[in-house]
Image (tube, rainbow, N blue to C red; front, side):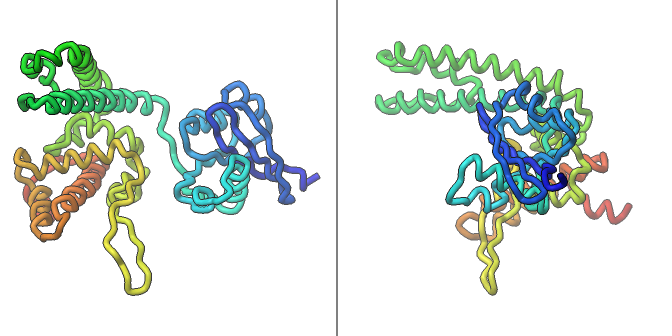
Length: 349
């Protein structure tokens, strides 16, 4: 019968088990539970081509690849963009799966579909994120050591994070040597691992992506930031306009306009937080004492002079947003970046 045809399957992915909602042409729905393993999902979806809607999560990338391999049409939904799912006061796996299926049948644009990066790009990006995790662990351990020493009325000398375990160990109070020695040994090991990953990124991973050299032309944008930018966006033609790059990484200001009211709000903070943090760090370097003269630096410094409580912070975020746009433009055109008089030279050309 025509009414017994499955139109859409909504899938709420869980860590061990996933709940599926089978939505039929007549509006009926059935629920199934399947283990979140490649073998179980492959066995269940070994059928004619269907439209499957899943929500983004830890398992969504490999599940979407598996379903596409089986010939199904897959929509990866972003539930944070759909209040009907994220703000549901009766939220559960069965309800989420059914909402995904019904929204997928009506209009997939309501689900703000997400495009996952490829397996190779994900593996390369994992190296950069592993380095970031090690650096953050090192920072927490250094802060712990300084706090413990400060509680004894002493202070350790200022130095870089890389040289902390070498330059400060002799300054430890005698009664803290036993307690903090394991921390210093861990810091030394972490420093070796961080430097090893940095060498891998610069010598092995970055050469596989030639456009890294194009993006790292900008002062303040190193190989790591350029590589993460490329791997996060992955396809430069994904954006119709370079101006959309700022919104993609969550650096666009939120809006809540109603009538005459249009308050100034913070940024959306959507997209990849790792890339956003790297761009803000790059903007901080551009505006800082070690930044080189450029149109971008001059624009940011003028913005910071406009006053206000958070003028410098807003200027830093604005420079990071403009930096994301500029990097995408260089990626698309492949042109040589001119830090000064860029717009004037373009008009003359």
